[in-house]
Image (cartoon, rainbow, N blue to C red; front, side, top):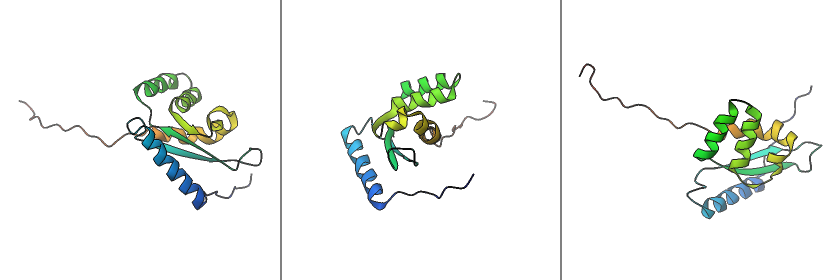
Length: 127
């Protein structure tokens, strides 16, 4: 199996993504506070060279649904997450099995990141 060359976005594509991201955030600043554009490069069998979709950070309901489904079926859980957090863009990334399984699914779980946190324990032992 030969190695594929690394594909990159053009400057114009990057600018379009940035502009779209700003527009999405302006539409609903509270709901679309954290938006993640995900890019999947098509191959010779796909209709496009580049697929771009925008996903929001999952809310409590979407995250809970994902966590429950994940116990039974990891791939179904990720597809559910994709459907629940999709905002706009190339819906084929969610609906097309090949684009989803071998493109989007590996990157989508990155939108579920944890924030840095720690327990601040100021109690004195024994009191």
